[in-house]
Length: 493
Image (tube, rainbow, N blue to C red; front, side):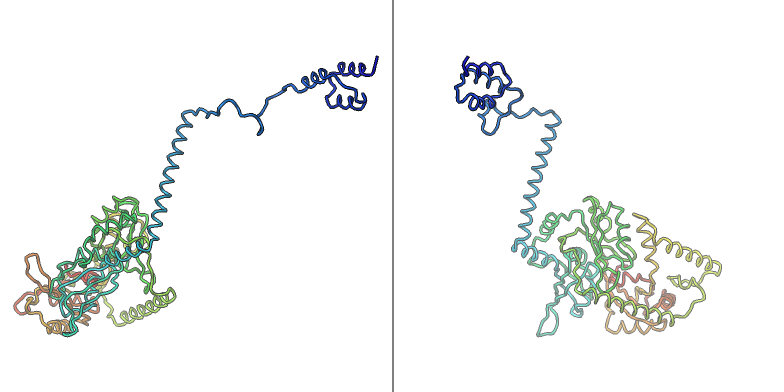
């Protein structure tokens, strides 16, 4: 037997011999003796048959079967629809925000909005008495909001104003309320004519555009807030119409922890804001009438920009507090102590009651004072809140006397104020005398004379002496007048 047949026999008998070893034997042991191709191919085919799953690699031939999406069940379909809807909403929202941002950053839009707000902040006041000056006009319009300036048109030849002026407010809401409330009121013997400037023709449409553009449907403007009320007190009163998300009173930079008498309230619903405007406008709270309307100022305009630095404001507040304390101490030293407590509490000057009744009234009023003081921190809402606030504010000292039917409208002259001052000085120290003419619905004018005394005792003595007294054939009616109404130039009482 030759070498070639021996090798071939060994290959066929050993089926587990690898192809690599076979090649090695064929090259080394067999000394380059040729191997039959059939035997080698048979061995390779046996060893490389598929033994598991086959995966297509990057170099494989493209699959003959096309790719198909899996079939979704009902829950997956619902989730997919929600995801598509959310994606569309977010895309639209982002596009609108980008568009709005570009609009607000546009210089022409900024200039146009500033011009619109400047026009809405101003009102025209005509038919002004030639004896009045800027201070008197400013005092009339201050209850509606902060007055920035009063520009009277002056005649250089006659050295008098021309009878009209432009009043500019800090906020457009104050101008809106003033134009709605002060037209045809009497001031200095003449009826004022109040309206919008002639270069502002479509004020209502501009206001509606500002409200809609800045999303102010839920926000309202409130002025005429009593100085002794804070933001929590105002919130309690206005919560009767709905839940409040914001209540901000504009702070007074010259007085610590005091406000300027106006601010903004934001509700969580539009209907609450509408109800508050309808019910609280001209509501008497603590002797002052509230003025309520829709908020117009953009959000960045509502932020209070103080013209006084914080350090200077604190210093001014400290000095003011010291001066007030000194004045209060001096007034207590000068005041004559009263032996009867009811005399101090009695605001109508009635002294003809018995001692028993007087003692009982004193005790009841003292109990009321204690009850009111104990309710300062009580959490209440709605009508009860308004009632307690008015009772709390009713404790403000009253020292203004109102005289009716003392003179006819034609008898008002420059000497009348001096005569009233001299007559009332016999009852106490007179600080001020103000004469106001009011026109009734029938067109007739009546004269009201307001006398401000330095203390309550003098006011009560004057009312007791002058009420029912005849002056030039007319019976005079003397009564106490609310000091807060007098300070806010409300002479309608």
